[in-house]
Amino acid sequence: MRKRLPRHAACTASLLLLAACGGSGGEIVSVGPPQLSAAVGAPLTSCTDLASRISFPSTTITGANAIAAGTLTVAGQPVPAHCQVTGRMFDRTGIDGKAYAIGFEIRLPNDWNGRFFYQANGGIDGSVVTATGAVNGGGGLTNALKMGFAVISSDAGHAGSLGPFFGIDPQARLDYGYQAVGKLTPMAKSVINTAYGKGPDRSYIGGCSNGGRHTMVAAARYADQYDGFLVGDPGFRLPLAAIANIKGAQTYNSLATTPGNLGTGFTQAERALVSQAVLAKCDALDGVADGLVQDGKACQAAFNLDRDVPTCTGARDGTCLSAAQKTSIAQLFAGATTSTGAKIYSSFPWDAGLDTNGWAAWKFSNSLNLDSGAVGIIWQVPPEDPATFNGPNFTLTGNVDTMLAKVNATNATYTESAMSFMTPPNASNLNTLKNRGAKMMVYHGTADPIFSSDDTQNWYEQLGTQSGGSASNFARYYRIAGMNHCAGGPATDQFDMLTPLVNWVEKGVAPDSVRANARGPGNAGGVNADVPSSWTADRSRPLCPYPQVVKYKGTGSVESADNFSCVNPT
Ligand SMILES: [Ca+2]
Image (cartoon, rainbow, N blue to C red; front, top):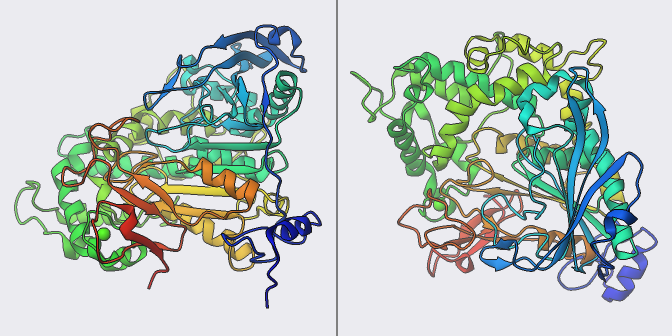
């Protein structure tokens, strides 16, 4: 029998690290992690003299610039006045003779909310992206800087002009993998202390794609440094995902009517045909045919590519798939394999969002031009010869078994394997995070073509098993139907997941659903061209914590989240 105590008493008890403040009613809902206190804000002491007052080992401050309100905007609204501090850490020369440093900027609001946000960036890093602190993957209506957080952004230790060739330098590999976050975090907290007369009360880290990977790696390696983790479409097993995508490129090339033009192996018309077939089998399984496949598990059982799409009897014309296409594409969705049939990475769920340009770009273009350099130069031990490296040729003619061996290899120069420096150690053990009262929120588009929501779902289930049945008292996972990689696709991809994360960390209010909306014509945060014209421009849906699914209540407009709820799957 659980005891009901007033909220104040529950929070006092939590100081003994025994109980949690939680639930909407203010009573103890379970014995669990401790409750962290709320951040308290402070005004910026000054900006222009900050450069001379900051002192931190191995750090060069290159500027402190007062930025007036409205210089930056988000969704047409002004970002308040703040101070931009720029600098770099650990200047050095790499083994390739090139100059390296960890470049960064920190944006410090004049009216600070007492919180720090580490903006983990995407791709292969290499650029100090403006430190605004995105709260989702798609076009946002707000950001962490506007909300009053002090925000850091970095290039993770190498210049973008190097492309993937920073991977020749072993230290640059490690900084990109995890060490830049470890070096920047205490420096940023020290800068904040200098700027406001106190360090951050609460610290958050978040990003999408490789930024989601950085965040999951930080949850495993630096859980003592952060209170809240916001993880989007995480490539937390990035080397494996890239090799699987390379195997996919080889497969699409084998199906291509124009060799080298991978999109001719699975044309836009054919992808639209499959998308419509998925909708025909799966859309109504969640209670309403609305263009969104919310009950993903039921859909995987209901849809069969071979059975549910016509087989061509003559030439391919967009109204059918060839027998060879069906076999090969079904195998890629089940999970690309090595020559011995071992799964390289993960399955991908069937979803309506595979007929978009964003889906095609990852499968048919980035596989040639991004995954190739990442695998061949940044992750393999030894790397390919940079003098002769040709990305598309590496992808189309390389041996995936060899790539897989080399991302697990080490030698005297490269003493950590890519799988070691890129992925979270012991990813399904977040005991440090949990036991100190930190929280994690994770989202993933179910039509992400490069990192699979199946992989994230499997990780979350393992996290629950490791936690004694459920991880929901410290980590929650939200599937976003139709969404491609971090944004786009026929989806409601605009939401603020940072505010509910703060409320969970600092007030004990566990997030149930998160409201999201589509970015149709006129959206202030940026338009998503994949929103179907049959939807209202601002269609909204709840995002539900897994394993719950979004279900229509049976009455009211299907364009409004108000008429949907989160329910346990049948
Ligand atoms: Ca539906």
